[in-house]
Image (cartoon, rainbow, N blue to C red; front, side):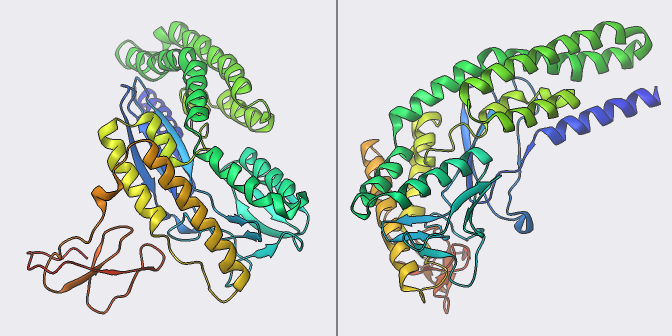
Length: 392
């Protein structure tokens, strides 16, 4: 019996490990317990050496779902490219020097993608969540580089507008739900057979007397998951054959990983859209309004670039920031979000607090002029009060 308990414990540890996700820092993750209600969380860069966050998916039936929506990690303008992001509180990107890599379109070297990293010449420009996103960014940079200068501004605005295209996101969301519907049922059956019925029968009756029925049953569901995942992934990601092969190999070698096949199908499916758009699709209206105001604060009050010493970098950052703000605020207005409801200085928590960060709303005591948590966003004056406890 001790050996059976050890085997079951190892099985569950492997399964729980497969429930962990490691999204890039500065990512918004939307997740569901599987009951149709979605929530969101912002992944911080607390695993700094890995430039990753961590997220535990719902391990129990009906298994839920998760969507990873990273913010863009670069700035593009008609003048050139800059390895700094107007959407990051901190810059976890790959930098060439103190100012970050930046170049005009004319001086831009050969653009290529290698795995998840986009290179300009031999210099890493941006690290993307997956190889498919890296290929798409590489293709965009190549097109813009070869384009007449007069056409670049419109082409960049069009690419930015696609991130805020609610109709396209809605269609993609419906495709995703349709592709995963049957797969989700089989994944739940595999969980019940492999992780519940088999271990319970082995503990109560004995492994030797029960393996012959629950193990083949789990094997049938496992094979069905592999076949259905292949079909669904090929339908949703026709160009990502390499990534599809890696995921299938992982689920073939480790059957408990197949229980999470839906997460592998869903997790990056809406990465091409802005978090505001994905939130509009999945969050309840009352939660979306609060979420949108928090995202808009991050868009309106962005941290300054890494260094203002390079005029070209500052020019690219300024153009990119202005056009992102315009697109985000326009989308919020079209969805009826009341931006003014979150405006205005909060009341000071106590008489020692005199400023606050307009991005994260944290209050600060005297002598602080910029928010360290938001990458140096300048602080603003609070409304004076004698409230009880300071929130620092």
